[in-house]
Image (cartoon, rainbow, N blue to C red):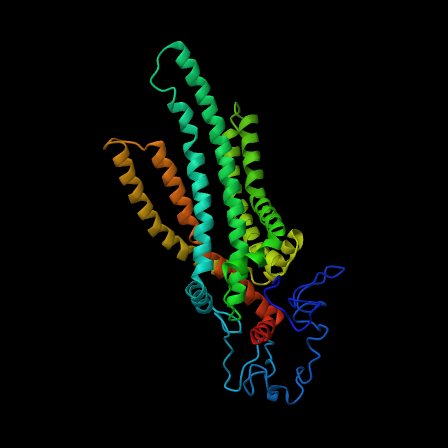
Amino acid sequence: MSSPWTSPDPSNPYQGWTPQAGGASGPGAQGAPGGAQPGYGAQPGYGGQPGYGAQPGYGGQPGYGTQPGASGYSATNQWGWAAKPGIIPLRPLGLADLLSGSFQALRTNPTVLFGFTFAVMSIVSLISAVTTYLPFLGLQSTTGFSDPQAATSRSGAEALQLLTMLGGSGVRMLATFVGTTILVGVLAAAVSQLMIGNKLTVGQAWSMTMPRLGSLLGTLFLTGLIVTAPILLWLIATIGIIYSLSASDSLAPALGGMALLFLPVFALIVFLNIKLQFAPICAVLEEAGPVTSLKRSWALTDGAFWSTLGRMLLISMVTGAIGGLIGLVIGAITVVLAFTTTGGGVGSSPLVLAISSALTILAAGMATPITSTYETLIYSDLRIRKENFASVLAQASNRQ
């Protein structure tokens, strides 16, 4: 079960985008869903020939397979409404379709979307708690001694604590990166099947994702590197200016110029993030390599940057509100734990800090199913609008 959808052409399982020599891509390119694909447009009567809509057996309903209209989107039946085999109608999606489809996916398959997410993020949270608490153990063992030997031991413990904290930060980042990568793949696979009315188990979703983990890791790494490069270069330039002009009167104007430069840098980061938003999904659902996935996401968002930006801002507000409510609960738990462990005193113990860190990561991770589902539906909408992808979904749903 390596492919979420299987098209009529077995040599082109996704009716997907195929890079051409010379850079041609998209609907008109060979192998693209909107182009003339071997076997896809050769079905008798599909290209507008009379009688195609009357063929029995396509969905089992007379008239279901009527030819696409002038828009080139999915076929509709004789009453004019689009088919809906799964969580979305097979036509271009509006905001209401994206939101309702996302929450319907969560209701339809909570075991994969929420259960698997909770399991993965629980492991990541446990790693975070352990790596947050460990640096304090060596320091606590030397606390309370005033002799010179104890002071020397304490200095060594503080150095060890610093190294442990740095190492712990690296482990937390790696665990979060790997956990997020796994979730992106599994959730995209599960949602892709829900669109055609197929509910996957955790094992099935994992079997679809596992062969793509290498490509997915590479895609997320390259995406993160490209998106963060502008701010890193800006920081390096700012530090260089401070170092070189620290004793000069021109330091203040130079820093003011760098502050103004941050605005276009931020705009560039937003632009790159939107253009590469769907690269991880392409790596899984289209079985593409890291570089190809980045190019594919860039091509899909051509002409759709502002609409994609607006859609992503909307889901950010939704998940932000949910995260804020969860944050209030975590804050209350942290206050109670801090009060009980310090006997009513001020401050938090290392154990409370570790628990708070774990709960924060777990809460942030639980918003991942909503965001991932929503992004997968936007990806599908872009393909429906550009590549007649709704017809591929319709045929895939009829083979379930």
